[in-house]
Amino acid sequence: MGRPTGPAPAGTAAETGLTPALTAGIPSPRWAVVAVATVATALVASCLLCVLCWCRGRRTPRRQPGDKAAVGLARVRGATPPRPVQPEVDDVESGPGGPQPWGHLQLSLHYDLGSQKIRVGLRQVVGLRAWAPGGTADPCACVRLSPGAGHRHETKVHRGTLCPVFDETCSFQPPPAELPGAALLVHVRDSQRFSRHEPLGTLRLPLAAVDPQPILELWLPLGPPGSAEAGGTGELCCSLRYVPGSGRLTVVVLEARGLSPGLAEPLVKVQLMLNQRQWRSRGTSARGPPAAPSFNEAFTFRGPLSQVQSVDLVLAVWARGPRFRAEPVGKVVQGTRASGQPLQHWADMLAHARRPVAQWHRLRPPSEVGQALAREPRPHLPLPGS
Image (cartoon, rainbow, N blue to C red; front, side):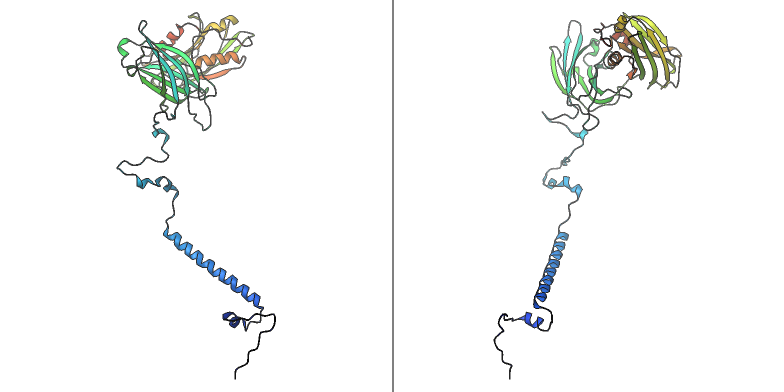
């Protein structure tokens, strides 16, 4: 006979199914068994979910970092390859109204039929780009006509700006036969006292492409910086010091570089010009090596204070050429008839009395220096303490 089943004791619930069968022979509390079963079920579910995610990840290829630029390029039709998302700076061509990476130059042109001179006005430059990110520059501009290595004009140096305002005017008088093929060359550079100037931008404007008969105002984009100007004759480094109390002007000829290797026995002649006439003259001894001689010779000149603002200092490099005869290689003029960096060097000497100021200068052709000395002197520069 079967065992009779009576009613369940009070305070307990009737258990049916698999759980009573599993837990009937376990001496542990029943709530602990239920908790263990719940945790085990959760672990199994988590494992199944991880397996599903892993399988799904294997079906989808992982995107590489270099594939970012190729997203959506498959939709482009045609044989022309698509341009990169971030093109190189040198390959960027700005559209109308777009920003120019090298800046814009504002200038004016006017051709005077009576004197047959071309008057060039350098107004300003905006949007220059410094060599260091987030940095600044000390820009100056040099303008000349090509072909030919005749007269050139160099502006003053503007410190700590990428948008210099020059407001300087110069004139050129090319032969009429060369006028149709002439071009205006403008080099914007970052002025450096003790090293070569860093180019910031260049402009080449063929005069045949414009009509400078009326006064023409132009905004033109600067091109990428070019190398050093062709036809250069080297550079000369000198130091200037002026003592107002004793009226002593000390010129130290330090060194030269970039001279032609074919020269021999280079030396430097130092001249003080007063009213376009030679007033004082000194000279260094011949030194070597020919391409980069080092002189380190000092010369002291004395004169009344009233004459300091009226003199012109001419430094001329002489050397023996292929004809075994001493000839001038290049010159630097400083003083009231100078322009650009030489004028700035002269002004710095007056502004910082009793302190030597050294700077590199590019040598100019002797004929160009002669034209500079024939110009009218600039207004007197202020004396220190005046």
